[in-house]
Image (tube, rainbow, N blue to C red; front, side, top):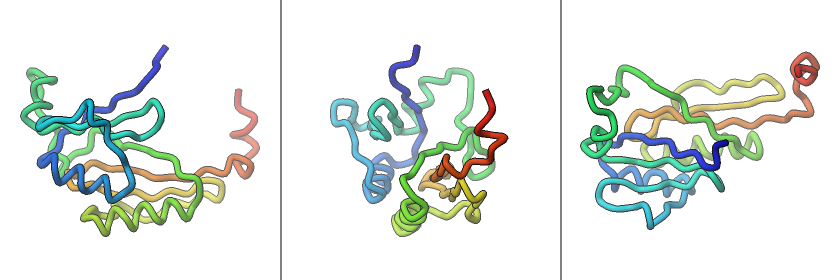
Length: 141
């Protein structure tokens, strides 16, 4: 059914958000970029639209934008190729002005860490070694 996924997120300052995510290695689609928004490429069919708050508000009539200093509406999870890539992404995020959100989560077969971006959105970067997944999980149908 779904061919592509576009996650829309409100940001305070679009230029700062673009610079932050560029430092993490993300690219942007210039066709969907103007003074109100940009399209950040996460994967072949996965994108995050970073929208200035006034523009974002136009998509949610009758609702308020979440105050990310007090609440969280979602956690964006992105897979990594290795534990080292997870750690590297967190280092880049912190160096670019983000904050480590919580301690590492290590389940042996799955390892993850999280950071908050400049706007308080939570991003979890994780690696899964499915060959080490517990048997009870492997056998679920």
